[in-house]
Length: 221
Ligand code: SAH
Ligand code: DHB
Ligand code: MG
Image (cartoon, rainbow, N blue to C red):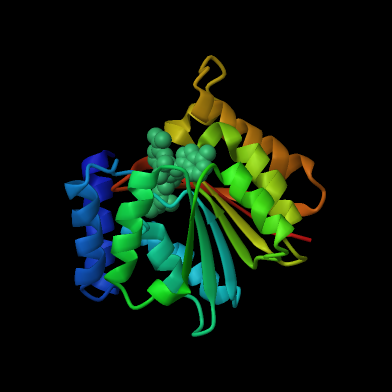
């Protein structure tokens, strides 16, 4: 089984289940035009995030790692009319592209994009009593994942759903001789979720247009 098949199946999922989506097509085209790395979630994964927002009835979402806002838009679409998503991005160029992408959508009024190191933005959100968030999506610099999980706990309530992207990394998460900082970050996320008695979690391995990776999903008790 190859990435070619995984991509064809992702295309089949999209063609079978999703409406044509010129807005998100334009977002991905803008990301390419502005040389953003193509590390957004896939369409199938974005729809999963949107469904998780709806399934949990989330009204307040926090995202760490915006890039061009592709996953932000998927999650914002799952929010009710009065819902809000705060999304945190370090890179001003990514943030600028994301901001103009939000303007292409009908959810821009729900998005609060904050530029700067996420650890600083998280401290500011805590100072503002911006929490508790109903769903938190962690998808930024992987070595900081345990720090982001720590902040996620502080900005949570009982029932908050926490999703962590890129925790499988081609299976390298079980490859002991890998010393890649991103893989170490994935392992640290597993240790955090496994070690915190307030968290009940699992991880789902995914294949598709974005290769072989996966999400960790946990709920705060
Ligand atoms: N969630 C996006 C992809 C995010 S890629 C999507 O699926 O569409 C990871 C993003 O995290 C990049 O844009 C990167 O600039 C950002 N990032 C890296 N380090 C960061 C930090 N310390 N604080 C905030 N954002 C950071
Ligand atoms: C990388 C980051 C991501 O968030 C992702 O989904 C895929 C790859 C990376 O930094 O390599
Ligand atoms: Mg990711």
